[in-house]
Image (tube, rainbow, N blue to C red; front, side):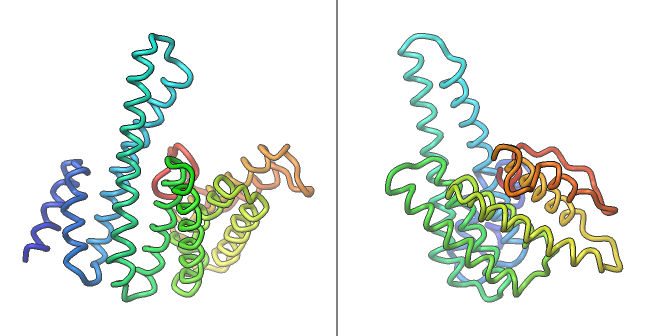
Length: 268
């Protein structure tokens, strides 16, 4: 009964956009044990994503002030730096909370392939986020954690979701970004993104109904990333140009891109 009340209150906090209040309530829901319902799982994902996104947006502003704009006294500069570090510590705490919940409760209690794939993708995402804010051995461990989690998520997703399913495409977006930005494995990133796009397009081409808008959006993100990567890698590589990638996006199922800061699924 208490778990249901925690969930109800967490949902109420979400409606009031008090995402920091949602997190401890949903941690209690997880710690009761057992598999989460779809609604509980979605609310948990939303709560942590919002808590993380808010702080990363704040971090970017402070980082920009610290590096590019501020020309005041040393004392003020130290204050700005201290505030940036405070935000970084909060971000690390959020990531650790998510990873602890996944390792200790969510993954061990996952009873379906769908939930297993989602939790390992979540582990990959939050380990990847962590790599941006920690250094040294912490960074190395986060990189290994993200890589292993994404590989498991991709393996499970192939048996649970069709090639054009939004989850599988979103995983391909984030996994390819991990290869490109974190591992600097650019060829692997391009291969993964192009393969995911091609597989989804082949499936959509034989559909008798309109594909999901989210699937089309994610396919567009894949080929936009491919275009950006081709451009940043001297424009042409192995005979493939930015223009070639953008041509992939032309489709009778085209939908307008929603405004998005960066080309990841979920938290940017």
